[in-house]
Length: 365
Ligand code: NAP
Image 1 (cartoon, protein in one colour):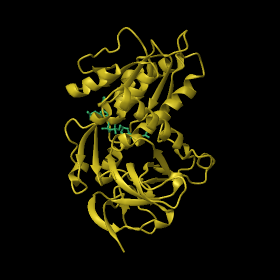
Image 2 (cartoon, helix red, strand yellow; image 1 turned 45 degrees about the vertical axis):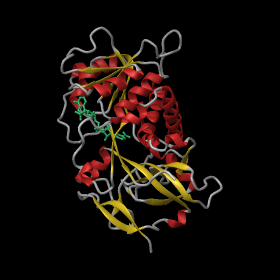
Image 3 (cartoon, helix red, strand yellow; image 1 turned 180 degrees about the vertical axis):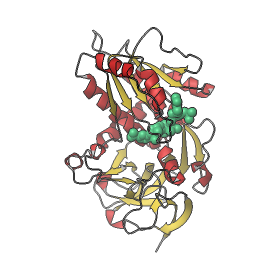
Image 4 (tube, protein in one colour; image 1 turned 45 degrees about the horizontal axis):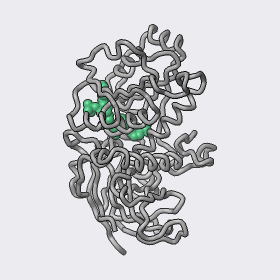
């Protein structure tokens, strides 16, 4: 039996270790994928901290392999769709049997009986290789994306959230007289990985786009914003932002109730507010009667958005390809650190200036 290196957890208990595990787990799925890079996100750190009580081991195992953001390369395949050498991004969510899961939208699962690789009852991708079925792999056509396509998973969440925005905003005439979003204002709260990706997509939609945090960000990040035409706001200094216009779209990646309410009060008629960040430990915020009046009288919609479906992975890959060409180097600079699997302190100590830290598992073959 072959043994491979893997990062394993015991959710919902805290901790992570680099261990040797059985390599042939799931071999019957047929396609062997060598892991190239896995991304580290707040969910991984939450599992390692023991803070995500909904995380649990796969059935029949007393551990779970961590990791849901991944790019890999096919090593061997029993499928006509994939051949040795192909680059692939694996899907995270696997359907249960509710109506949404059955139509390929486990992201909108209506009974919670789906599974998520590396999170809820399914091994993740932080291991030297893993086995998958073709239906759970999204092809990456361009070998130049072999590293940056690790951003597909976090970006697919953003693509889905904009699908939510499109559906909600179609209830009235949202766009300007030229049927574009030019002149409309989007605010993205937060300045980490997802906030950057949201800001870039908001620019794709033509929004005047602001990214906000309560502290300044590094010059290198300001340059990345400028490259996409995104303006950064340190609202601890610019306390009245925005003063002379309303916000048409607000997307929160902070999960901080007070900050959300602060900017809700700047939302304009028919605005859409998408809650994306989650932080169960954030201090309580206060929503007043005047806030409710503001929301109701302006037809403001507030909605949550979680995860995404296969179609959003595909659209995310198209965007990564486009940005790779249109904004040379910016996608590479989103990856602020490359670590070895043994460096498990990356799960407990967030590096200064981090946008996306990744673990390298294998060289591109
Ligand atoms: P993250 O580091 O958790 O991002 C949070 C961002 O919010 C950081 O930039 C943080 O700033 C900022 N923030 C915190 N409090 C703030 C405040 N009061 N005002 C303004 N900004 C504030 O990493 P991420 O990977 O980008 O994830 C963003 C959030 O999305 C996380 O909560 C994550 O759990 C969630 N998430 C949701 C989904 C979904 O499907 N809904 C999927 C993936 C992730 P500093 O830390 O720099 O102060």
